[in-house]
Image (cartoon, rainbow, N blue to C red; front, side):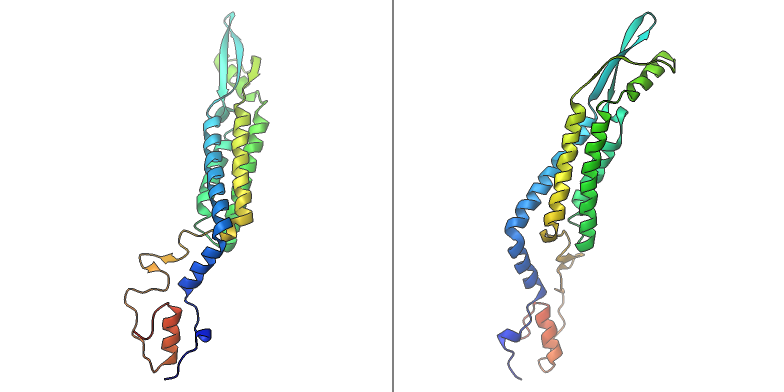
Length: 220
C-alpha cells in the first residue's frame, strides 16, 4: 500500500470548524457579548417601562374631580409585543445559520425600531386617558383635564434603541457567531463521529479517505 502525503490528506470537518471558530473568535466574541447584553437589556427595559404610568389627568364627576392615569400598555401594546419578538429573535440568531440568521437579525432590528417608534408616538397621546374618562363618567363625550406625561415613554424608546443596536450588531457580525447546534447532532456528540465507527479496509482507498474525513485514524 502506498503512503499518503501530508499535503494531500484532507482536513477533518471538526478540525476545520475549530480553526474557523478560532479565526473568528476575537472580534466575534466581543460583538456576540455586546449583542446579548444590548438585546437582553433592551427587552427588559421595554417590558418594565411599558408597565409604568405614562400619563395622568383628571375628569369632572359629581361636582368634583377624579384622578386618572394610564400605563404604557393602556396607550399601546406594540412596544411590549415587539420586545418579546425581539427577545425571541435574539435567541433564534444562534439556532439558525446563513440566510436564516440574516432574516432573524433583520427581525430583531425591526423589532427594536418598531418598539422605539411606537413609544415615541405614544408619548403625547391622550386617547387612552379620554377613553378611561368616558368609562369613569359613563359619558362618551367626557375628556380628561390637567393632562401630564411622564418620562417612561422615552425610557421605553431607549430600550427599543438597545434592541435596534443588538440587531445591527447581528447583521454586521452575525455570520461569524457560533450556532447552538452547529457541530452537534441529536445525542451523538460531535458531527461526523459515530458511536461505533465502521471498520476500515486498508486495501480500499475509499475507506481510508472516508475515515480521514470523519476525523478517524485509519491505521488503528
